[in-house]
Structures are given as structure tokens and as C-alpha cells.
Length: 261
Image 1 (spheres, rainbow, N blue to C red):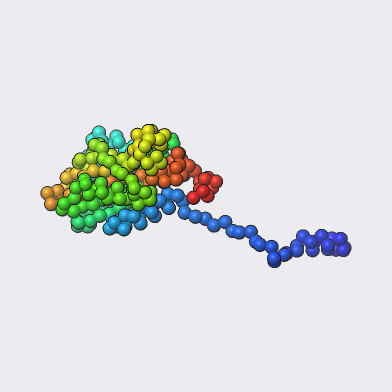
Image 2 (image 1 turned 180 degrees about the horizontal axis):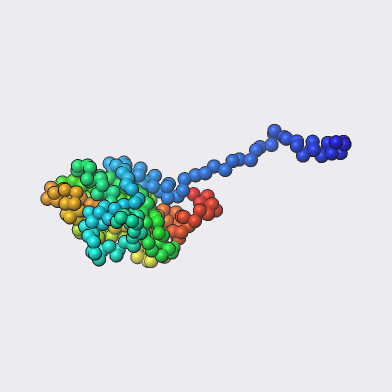
């Protein structure tokens, strides 16, 4: 090697220890995971335990035990991915409450977070798989007023501001009475904006008092026990908290989007 080649080689391999090195990129939690942790923390502080269940369910747990027998028109509300031997991908986290009630005696209060699946078209507000948190509280004297107080407290803690909740009549086969739950818009604080379609309210979840037939399916006497159940879409909560207008962005894997959280 001549002197010229040696000089080039030395210059190329030169290392200056005083120059700061390149920082390694550190990953962080997905926005849905961050929201889930917040939801669990809030409900845990209110005395709720966290339980889980399988994503592949049987027809009994996903439908029959929830007062949705075969050929019942309410089954059309859930576009189901059917598997072999009457198994399916769960369409909601409600089967977890049946599994829990089979093995545990009331009084109890639980939440059941998890992934659910629906065979439906994908657009800005719909996905074939998304996340839900099921809630259940059973005791001897539980009313819709108890539910409203708890869910209004949850909303206020989650959004770090005073949030009002209202209940509207609805229908779910596993609750009676059933209601849709609206919360006051956290963007305009109830005055009306494009987010809430100028109404001041945003529909966020479904809920109701547990149907007597559901209690009977787990050999529980509805004359002695009653309670409420609810289902919150984690994706919708995430979109509300971070002002995201397309649910597909949460599952895109686009790092330019995810790095913002």
C-alpha cells in the first residue's frame, strides 16, 4: 500500500469519540394500548376487576346465553365470522360476562377488554376487527341511576374535565331496559360543533340492565340479583381523545402516524 492509499484508508476509518453517537430509536405504546391502560386504571379505582376471555367462542357463549337464540332476528345485528363446529370469532366481549358469572358469585363488578370481530365493510368508522371493553356490575339493588353515575364519573376522569352523560332508549337482546349512552361533546363542551353535528352530544356506547334470561342462563335468580352491563369501543374512545377522524389509521402501521403518540 502506497502512502496515498494509506492516507485515504486512515481518514476513512478515523473515529472521533467526542462526537455524539446516533440515538437508537425507542418504541412506545400504541395509542389504543395507552387508552386501554387509562380505562383499566380508572375502573380499577372504582372497584372493578379485569377479566379476559377467548377470542374464538362458541355459539352458546356468544349468542344463546345472551338471550339471542338461533334464528332470532337480533343475530343480524352482528355480522359474524363463523368457523367450524358452531365456533366463531366473538362479535362482542359480552361472552366474558357469561363465563365469569358461571364461576363467580355476586356481588361483583368487572370489566373485560379485548378484541372483537365483525364481517362488515371497512370505512372511516368501521373495521373488521377492533377493541371493546365490556362492563358488568351485579348486586341485590342496582339501578340505571347507579350506571349513569359510574359512567359519567368515568368520562370525566378519562377526558380530565366535567362530562355529562345521558341515556336514550334503545334495544339490545341481553339487556332490558336498554339504552344508548351519549356524552356531552368534549370539543365544543356542549355548545355544538362539526364533531357532534351541532347537537352538543356524541353517541359513545350501548348499555342496559341485565336481562333476566341472561341471569337464568347462568343459574342465577333474577328476583334476588340485578345489575347493568355496557360495552365501550376502545377505538372510538381513542379517536375522541386524540381527535382522529379515521379508524383505519389506528391499524395502518404507518410510523409517521404512530410516532405522534
